[in-house]
Image 1 (cartoon, rainbow, N blue to C red):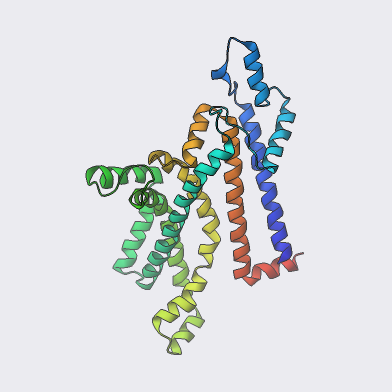
Image 2 (image 1 turned 45 degrees about the vertical axis):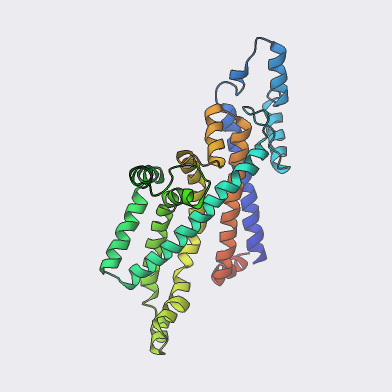
Length: 310
């Protein structure tokens, strides 16, 4: 198991390095300079600005300095907001984005598993058809479209919830619903399929034959094994949720990292773009790493295969 963890960790580091390198060179391939709007008739001022942000250095030197900033977790100052550093923007915006992401993941997992289990237990019944219709709609409708519909129907037309900002539990409902519906639908469909297969296994029939209550059979025996595929896709779903928060935060005027990231793209604020991209990439890759480890602990076959293969 130790080899498995070391190999996954090394892969995680390499992945982040590749993403960081691609981000850096793609930013530098864009025409023009991020200081275009700051150009002054005073050439000395322009040169001082370029020197301050290391834009006067050769590209390879800029790349080395960029890697050093990643290694030291110091992404430097923002070009468009001189009084701010990338780290200060991250420390202010990420907790809000993380809160939105955590509540979304919990909502998606709990509701998706519940919907999938009920659909499997009522296979080919009305509940099954309703649950799968909801799941198909959840997968088909993009979260930004759903967000617009929720604002129009539940905030504007009926005034059930506030339409924007992030200052109370009521403000959290609509953005969480907009983000959680898609992942919930995926989890529901996966749980239903896995539960239907699990319920036909011999050990489930044996548990029922022993006289165990239906609730104990479902929760203790069937659900535990049926959730293995769900654990497998959790990392991917978390990546989708956390990157999807950027658009949703912009729509609902939530002061998280999405606001700073979108603004930095519009303003060509290279340090913020690269710092945010690397930070989120590292975070998401680390989440995938944890899911890999969790799956390896839950399924001994992975550990045995890894150790047997060297």
